Image (cartoon, rainbow over all chains, first blue to last red; front, side):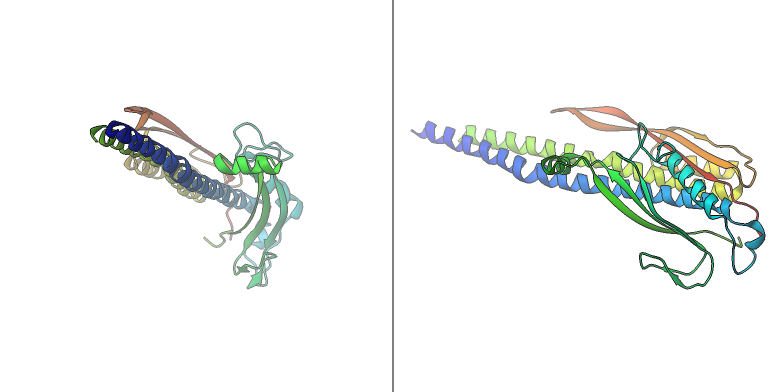
Length: 174
Length: 125
């Protein structure tokens, strides 16, 4: 009888342990890891947007950069931004992801504006701009891992759309 | 009772190993953040300088070495004319211990790479 009780306690311990692992520790780590990976992806994209924004410097009219009202070529600005965004995020010319890209579907540039004068100004997303800056709003489809992927599958979606607003100051006079 | 204690000890050890395993999953992510950060700082300096010079290269390699990266390769043009493309490519490896089996730890080598492009800044004013 005593032996049976011991075996019973051991079974309860194993069930309890499995329950803690399955319903507490794994979900907790999965959630934290997923969040960490997501934050990491956002940081990588923000860095990429910064590097891409710096490249748009080429669209500024060099003669006007010493003046108050800096002139730029808007078509060139868009072309340069698209070109370097594509190269830095491993996308093709139509902003469709290639192998190894962080994006999982076509990246969209929803807003792209260069603020050259009239400071302080407010960007379309409400942030204050005090210096020569480029404002962008890009939509990047990201594929989640772990539990979010399961949730998305259940909802019939393939990815989440990350809408990222980023203002980058372009350095002048240095 | 000894049987119960044995099961309990086994469960605790297993939980400990699995917890360590889970925590170790964060290490490569943190390393990737640091790696990208150092490379990004270097690219900003390169962009401002108009190419990769020895100071920037040594500083980048030194920072990555301090963080534990090995076999570091830095590829970038040293003299980029203002207005031309700058492409910084950095490759490195990081060796760390990791659970490869339930009770076995072994060295694994992770590879890290950075490949970003921008334009060297025009001379203004």
